[in-house]
Image 1 (tube, helix red, strand yellow):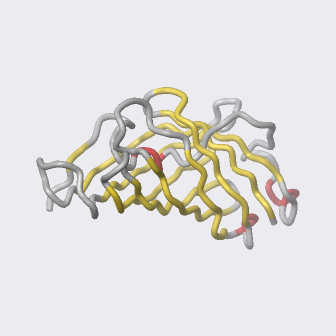
Image 2: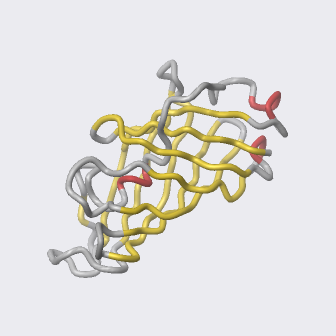
Length: 168
């Protein structure tokens, strides 16, 4: 099956690629992360969509259960410094009532990685993609045993603000 390239965030899983958004306080991802190991904190990052490919069940047809989207975004701290990337996949689980998809995303940051997953609702509704909250399921390095959540808001086409509420 050949991928269909999507040009905007309005499609199904572009939401997940930019897995984090919303202004809150914050420790920058460029802080000395070893000093934060084992401490709760909030990290605010901006994600810019770098790549997105859709793999529809019915190429050229209506959205369907099982459609997949693969995304990658570049992450920036509040000062505009590149600090990492996200990479993930989303699978459409429901097309009725605005649609629903389950997404799994990895954030690669200084000092380690965070694994995040959850549902995104309303991705098939026209207009700006909805905000969403996903759970942190684990991590590596300074994020070892991390828990918490990621809130994502679309702030411009192809751009999301991620607020990572990190619990250790």
